[in-house]
Amino acid sequence: MIDLDALTTAAEALEPLPASATRLAALVCKEAPEIDEVVDVVRFDQALTAALLASANSSWSASRSRITTVRDAVVRLGSGPVLSLAMGAVLRSRLHKALPEYGLGEGELWEHSVAASLAGELLTRRAPNHPPAETATAALLHDVGKLVMARFLDEPLLEAMQLAAEEGIGRRQAELDVLGVDHAELGGLIAQTWRLPPSLVRGIGYHHNPVLGGELICYAVHLCDVVAKVVGAGLEDNPDLETYAVAVQALGLHPDDIDELCRLVDARFVEVTRRFG
View (cartoon, one colour):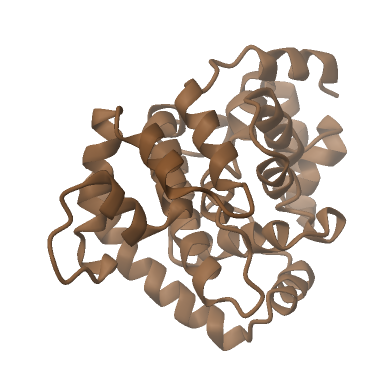
């Protein structure tokens, strides 16, 4: 069993997010964010501005004329995708690292996170029961707890988790059985430490148990995780089919809608990962 106090201390010791990122998250999670406030946060960050303009002028943005200003890019993309881009720019290097404790090579957690985020962008527009604009960002960060959890997985714990997983309960349940906490709960703690808004904390912390979270963002991030696995940017666990079905219903979707979602994410994933290099 892992010392939960030690986990909490490690989560709190993570490098904080830039003030601009937390401010942008707070703005986007407001019920009606002011475009001018979002623009003011973005326009003084050269790297983010470049990424924003590239995305606004991509084939997926459906822009008929070239976007050349931050304001036009924010209007074109919407505040949710802008926040996801900002968080991706800040956290890419951290999510890109190999996590051998989870069987992940360099770049694999990042690719999974990007695919989940793309699914989140689409769900906010296409789901009959619309999840909030920050869904794509919660999906991008949904596995951030693994960054801290991996530090505590020594050989005996890894062997115990492997034995538990081989009994057919899945790796996430093995985390709970062996460690007393799972990476989703730890991810929610990290989001709190980073002073992210409550909706992001819940979307991350309950993505494996959205019924307990009880909000659309929790169900949506669960589906984003599933879609990312289906398109091949996935991890080792198979989806919990019962939870998956409940999440599809909560968002007002049909199983056929998920097939289309997977197709769109798969197509866009190639373009986005190429742009990030």
